[in-house]
Amino acid sequence: MFCTLSTLRASGNAWFAGGPEPVPDSGLINAAGRFQGGPAVDRTGINVTKGLRYRFRIIGLSAKGFFEFAISNHLMTVIESDGIETQPYVVDSIPVLPGQRYSVVGTPPHRRFLVQPRMPTTRIDKPPSVPTLLNILANGATNDPSFGPNENTFTLQSNAIIEVSFIGGTGHAFHLHGHAFDVIQSASGGGPNFIDPPRPDVVASGGTVDQPVRIRFRTDNPGIQSGPQSIQPNEVWRELCNIYIALDPSLQ
Image (cartoon, rainbow, N blue to C red; front, side):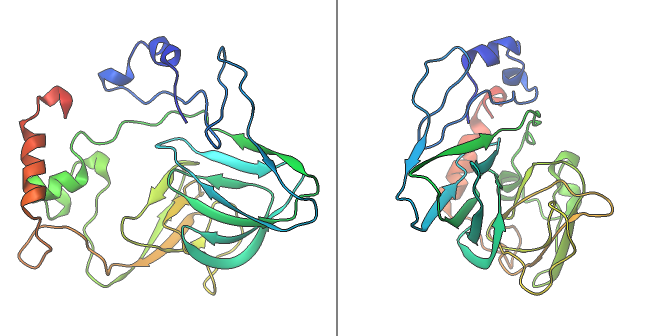
């Protein structure tokens, strides 16, 4: 997904001044896409042999926006999400969030079919001024008060089972670094699944108070952190932090 220069200029360059990110006005599928006022390039099409079953690998390469992926008049069977095989289930569309990967199987009824993406129209706020990882490495942040309120950073006990519920924020991507997690309840509705839930590493928010999105994971992969029992950053990491800290504040 991308924003054209006209979109950025129309926003008064507010994004460059620290405002919210503009809504993408176009996207690419297999390197092809159109935008208003741009050239009428060929749309993405996939040629197949009628009657054969195909496995399609879908990868969301966007940074912020997401696609709603569908194949015209056709159902798909999801067999894998984010590199982990899942109990097959049939869908007519898939929300593909930034960084998500899916494998779906289908038997197209025609030799050529249309891939139909739908993009969001909501704006996304800017991230924290100091990235959480950098705050840990450069400033030795180790507990909740060390992080800003807009970071939503929480310190957790090691090797514990954690359940997180998401309410609201439809279509926002949640990714847990270094972990796959069990999605025991999704935004699409239905009851919780404690038997064979999908295990992605990205999930869409959008639950309600009565029907939240729920995930579970074990805190067994802490990654880089501060403290005497932690994995300490090496000289390359320290050099990177010094370079960042030395930058003019407007460039950080």
